Image (cartoon, rainbow, N blue to C red; front, side):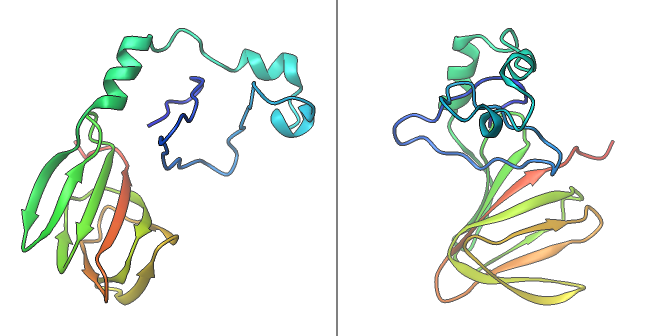
Length: 160
């Protein structure tokens, strides 16, 4: 998970899903040539000021990146997996079906496979590449289709 304002780099075999607000500015400090595109129109001088170079040290960043996923719940070959220690990112790895009623708002990205999302709203087919928002008040079920489905949930804050 890339933290806001902290420079990050994708290296060999490293990828992540980034959820952004429509108003987020993306600054690409290592870009050459197109300053307008690399700084979303902010200009290079202003753009580099938005980067926080003190937030994380290398050891902490590396420890986060190397943390092993933790299975939160498993049943009938499907499982919920916590991907980071801060509980903000979960994967639903579904071979049959799995129910979710944790009361957490989430933005969900279908990372692989196909299936359907079911709830009080009915049944909605889902497939790789689709993104959707799920309100905290709506329990739902994910069912695998002809192949297993993997859904990444970017969770909102837990209710207190």
